[in-house]
Length: 278
Image 1 (spheres, rainbow, N blue to C red):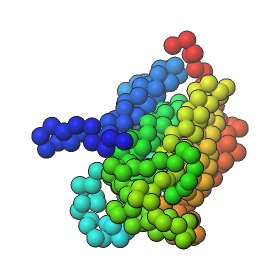
Image 2 (image 1 turned 135 degrees about the vertical axis):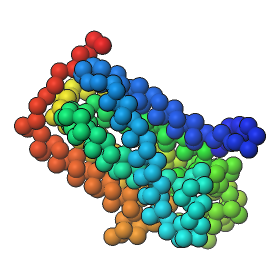
Image 3 (image 1 turned 45 degrees about the vertical axis):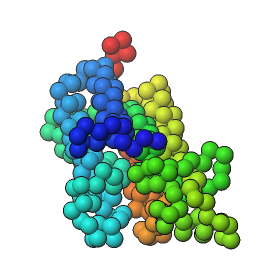
């Protein structure tokens, strides 16, 4: 992995930031194309993109703080404003969704029409956002394991070296008692799992037969994403301090329930034509 790609003076360009920028840009272009096919203003799409970025960055930071209260209390200024790590994507999705929902309501366009058009871009962006986690080794990896595809991140932002990661050492000793702890602890590459699942999801959203406006495509995104994240949390390092679950699992359940409700209440919603030739 290469956490820092290059440095110009005191400015460091990190691989996570580059991948995140790529995820946003290509995801936005994909959504713009979806909007054009449905005859929706691309200007509205750009408004939603801006709110998605703002809500995504701020919301994911707030969610990270809620998941890591001791770290925040120890150094609040650094955690909030200076740290180059410390983002929890589910929190970003929630805040971005709220802001975009406000903008859609203001536009007068049917919410589920735009949500259906936006869904593939969300899945696409997540593919590359999670790959950024792998390139940076930012601590989003999973628990120790001995599987053939296990990975180590000795030079990561949050390294897997035993003398620099006490949490990982404790987890290794819990999972493999009476075994010596490796110098570099192999872990589940959970971002790769999520990226792969999101690629499959994106292909289904793009090439499936969807009735735009019913909310089915958006609901499918919520349910798939929620289920994937819920089960992957069991092999991540997040604490199970929210009713016996991680905070991300609680949010994932909300995603799943919301998706089911959208499906169940979709019968009376209007459908809209999409020009497949554009």
